[in-house]
Length: 206
Image (tube, rainbow, N blue to C red; front, side, top):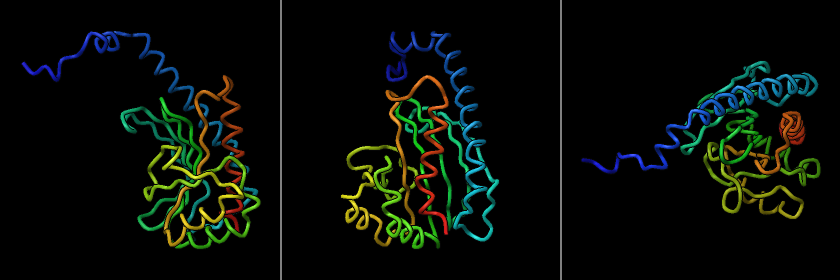
């Protein structure tokens, strides 16, 4: 008998916890509705602030995704605005990562990155000290935060940020919300998403 595949007593109790799975399903529905409301709240921002974007960028493009295996944990996210090709990317992702945190992130790659980087430093006072961080990983799909993963965008980190972004053809700027700090009302999440988007606008507007 292969004991490695045998469930422990604690694992059988989780398996048998019917209420847990009902709660998980209900939470997923509520998170989806929150992301839908955030999408609605972000739409006027794109209307008011045309973006520096590839020629075939479509401001209305949006995607909602739900999955189970982001480092073994469930996740849901909204991409809006959303532009992905093999060479170029311009997206704002609002990610709910179960057991970890919420993340609002600007994802950019490709021909316009040099201009985005120039905008960041030319308008640094408009972006710094707004709870934003540079994600240090060369992968755009790393979602951890903290030492070794992120560097806070503050006035005293300007030279370090310049070194991190030097010669990069892609980068990600994010705001992380601890699950311990979240309030009951989903308005807190929606407002945080809109505020974060406004904070990164100086980077991606002409």
